[in-house]
Structure formats: structure tokens, C-alpha cells
Image 1 (cartoon, rainbow, N blue to C red):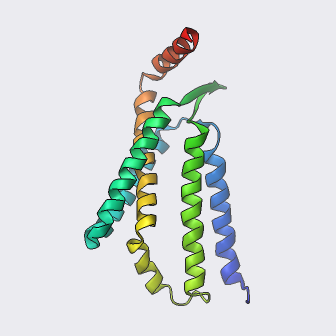
Image 2: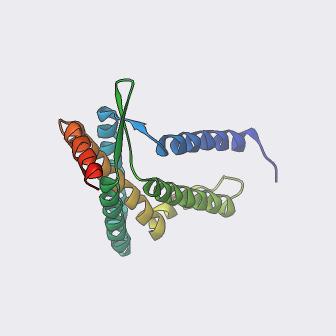
Image 3: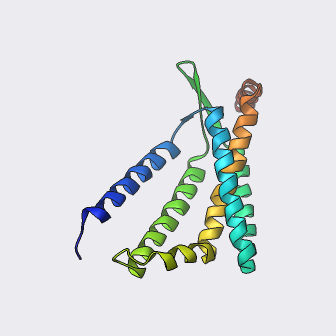
Length: 181
């Protein structure tokens, strides 16, 4: 196997973005409503694109429905286990660590699977046309991507809703629940 800069540079870029994704996903994140709104738009467009693939291949509707149900289940669990923190005048939030781990595991496993499949399909990276057409027909990848898209759309919408005048009330209720226990 001959490694060239042509194959090393994309790998370095991919590793860098994966590092940023993992670092951003685990732990407290700053509350930035503009970024959350942008995330909603991007994932909505992504989900719309996936649903167009399903129109071309109707057998994928089942995986889209499973992705929707799984995404809403994660949103429901994340809403129940969200925590906020105020540091240096900024508000930070995070959800339960298991939601973050599930999302990262799903994303990384499907990503690594597809990259491995890409390399095994055409190690010389010259015949990517047939591979790019197969992405839309892989049911599990479509289902996992739709699950992630639905989660981020639902959770970001919830955070934006909370950030509008309800954040203080949410913190008050959470403290009240803790004191009641």
C-alpha cells in the first residue's frame, strides 16, 4: 500500500473534525441560540435530503421511521436530564452523559464503517461514483443519520425554547425538585 499526500491530507482533516466533534459533544456547551438555530436549519435540510432518498427507495421509509422514533426517544431522555451552569456570566448546558455517548457511538461507528467500506470498495479512490450512489441506499446509515438529525433538531429547539425567559424557571424547578428529594 502506497500512502501519498493525496490520501493523508483528507485523513488529517477528518481526524481534526472528529476531534472537534468529540470535544464539543462531551461536557458543558455554551448556550448560543444563533448556533442552535443554525443547527436546526442544517439538520432539517439534511433530514429533508435523506427523506428524498427514501422517496427514490421506498423500502427506506421503515428506517426513517425508526430513526424518528429513536431520535425523539433520545430527545425525551435528554430533556429530562439536562443541566445548566452559569460561569463567568455565560450559561452552559449539557445533557446526560449516556445520550452524548450514544450519539457519538452511533456517529463514529457509521462514519468508520462507511470510510472502511469506501477504502475496501476502491482503495485507489478513483472510482467514487458508484460509492456515492450507494450511500443513499444503505438502510442502517440512513436510519442512524435520521436519528441524529431528529435528535439535534428536537434538542436544539428545546434549548432555544428554554433560553427564552424559561431558563430561570427551569433552574428554580430543578432546585426545588432536588430539595424535595
